Length: 567
Image (cartoon, rainbow, N blue to C red):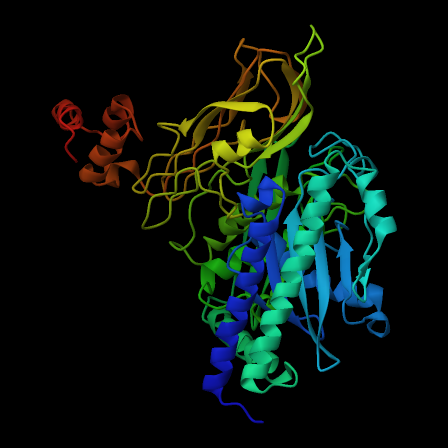
C-alpha cells in the first residue's frame, strides 16, 4: 500500500511518541535513583539495518547519540541468523556502548508477522557495577567494574540465569542492578507493543517506507542548514582541571559541502586516571553541540547526525583506547560542546552560549557503620549517587539557567529521593549568589550543597567535579562564572576528584560552579540588575561595583523586598 507524505508524517510523530512512552516506562520501573529521579537514560527505535529512526525526548545526548552507533555493533556481534522473537541483548562495553561500564545498554529485535522489522534500544546509568565503584581512581578499565560483552540476556524469552548470577556476585547492590536490567528489557517490550499497534493501524508489513521517509527528509533538512553556513573553518580550545594536571581540548571545526568536520588533533593525551573518554562519547557530544546550534528543530536520527563527522587521534583523551580507565568519561565529554562552541563562534558569531559548568556536579557516597567507636545496631552499608548541576552559560539573548545541566540535560535529584536511598543527610542545598558570570546576559547560578551521614555512620565520598582552577569563560565581554570548591566542615580542603574518607560526624561542604556571562556587564538593563538583586541572585556589592547600580536604587530594592513587593 502506497502511503502519502501526510500519512508518513503522522507515523513519524507516532514513532516519537512510542519511544517517549518507552522511556517513561523505564523511568517508572527503574530501581536506580539516577534513572527515576535524574533521567539519566535514553530510548530509541531503529530500522532493521540498525539506523536510528526516532529517539525519546527524555534522556541525555551522550546516551542517545552514542546508542545511535551501538545497535550496529549488536547486529554484528549477535548475527542476524541468531536473532529470534523474545530475544533481549545486553552490554556495558564502553567502546561499543555509551562510554563507561556504569551504563547498561539493551537491544531487543522487533518481529512482526514472524519477520524482523527493526530494533528497540535503551540505556540507563546504574549506581554500581562493582570494581572500585563510580569514580576516577582506577588505572585501567579492568579495575572499574564488571564487563558484560555484547551477548544475549534472554533467548526466545528465556533469561540467562548464569549471567544474572555472575552479575549478582560482582556488584554491591545486586537487587537494584538486576531490577534496572529487567526495567530496561521491559521498556523495550513496551516500545515493541506500541510499534505493532501502529503497524496494524496503518496497514504496514514493514518499516521500510517510513524509514526511508524519515531518513531522507532529515538528511535533506540537515544538509540545507549546513550548506547555508559560511564555507570556512576555525579553531577553538579550552582547558579543564583534569585529575592531577590540567587537560586541554583543541578542536578545529570545518564547514564543508554537505558536512561539518570536527577534528580534535592536538588534544591532551590519555590520562592515568579514569577521566578518559572513548570516541563514541566524544562523537555524541560534538555532534550534539553543532546540531543544537544550527538544526535544533530537526528530529534526532541517523540521517540528521550523519553529516556531523568527528575525528580525533587515537591516544588522545577524547579517543581513549582500551584498556584506558573511563568511569568518569562524562567529565571530559561534557566539556566537548564548550570547546566546539569556542571554534564555531568564530564561524557564526552571536549564536552559541557562553561556557557553563559543563560536567555534572556528581558525587557518590559509600556509607558504612562507624569504625572509630561502636556503631548502633541499625547502621548499614549503602551506595548513594546524587546528580547535581552548576549553572549554564548565558545565551546571546537570555540569561543562563540556574543549577541546570548543559549539555547533558540530566535533572538535579530531589533531596528526599537522595536521603531515601541510604543513611545520608543533605544539610544544605540552595542557589549560590554571585556565582553567575556578569554580562549583558548573566550566567546561571551554581549551588551550595552540604552532605553528611546519619549518626553512627562514616563514609567515603567519590568527588567528580571540575571547574576549580578553570571556571567557565565568558563570551563577547562577559565575565567568568565562579569556580568549584569542596572542603570538610572542619576546614580540611578536599580534592575535586577521587575517593576521600569522611569521619563520623563530619560534613562535606561544596560550592558548584556558575555559568559565564555573555556581553559587556555595562550593557545589562538596569531593571534586570535590580531584579537579580531582589531575587538574591547577586549581592549589593556586585550590583554596585560590577553593574554600576546606584546606592539609591539598591536602597529602593531593599525597601521593596522588605515590603514584599516585586521589583
